[in-house]
Image (cartoon, rainbow, N blue to C red; front, top):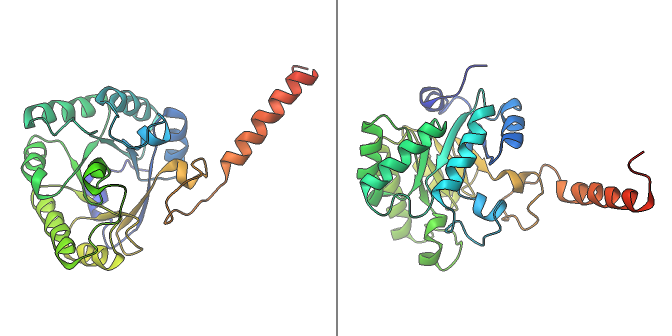
Length: 257
């Protein structure tokens, strides 16, 4: 299997729908890669899945870089995308460029950042410098304080139009794909049809070119997953069962043998 890259992801539009996942450590990244996952996102969602935060906002650049390096060491076929966390690109383009370069040096094949027209110039600067960028419009979790919670976006005509404009702007700036998060499926369909680059939906309906799921949601490790998630396993119960059995066997002398 050839390694996924910008060219192969773009070529998949209209040909093959891609099931993409997050991963934050070498163990699960290796399993995802061996299972044929084409894009692995080292997401700032690690703040909520791995670090115990209520939002993605506290995630530090150093944490993303450490996780990216761990994932990149074991992945052979998937494209590895590193999220730029809150604060890593809002404080000036020079700082943003340094952080994006650090992600690539850590082993990422591309970076992802949130926002539409307001980050279009930054996306162009990154792509002009040879840094592939995956854009992200719609519900952007780093704007949770602005939204007043994790809420579906694009529900009014004006809001939907702005998201469409944002998607077109980031494509024109050189983004090789665009994440559409928590927007009406009709809007996601319209954007997917208008863009020449792939769209990757999460809570945006079935007509996007690809889909994201957070690994912990798919595996049933996160027991408070969003309503659009399909659980393909229920590992939380299985993990608890295994841990409890271990504790009991140690207490009763059954382990070690």
